[in-house]
Image (cartoon, rainbow, N blue to C red):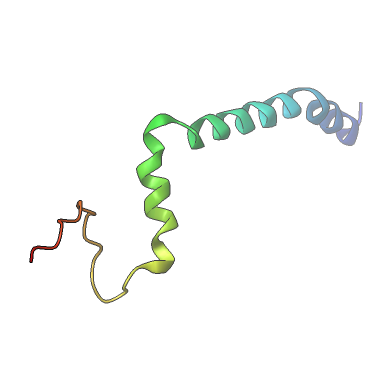
Length: 65
């Protein structure tokens, strides 16, 4: 069996299985329950002020008269 055929056979069987398991693992990693804060932080990067660090968001207080 030449090298090309051996690699083609590996890619068609075990390589496909490895890529599928990697894909499923990435989907599970992205949609895990604790990832919301990380995704929200990454989504706000374009809106940040580059000269000051981001302050943690706190609930707004009602205006007093």
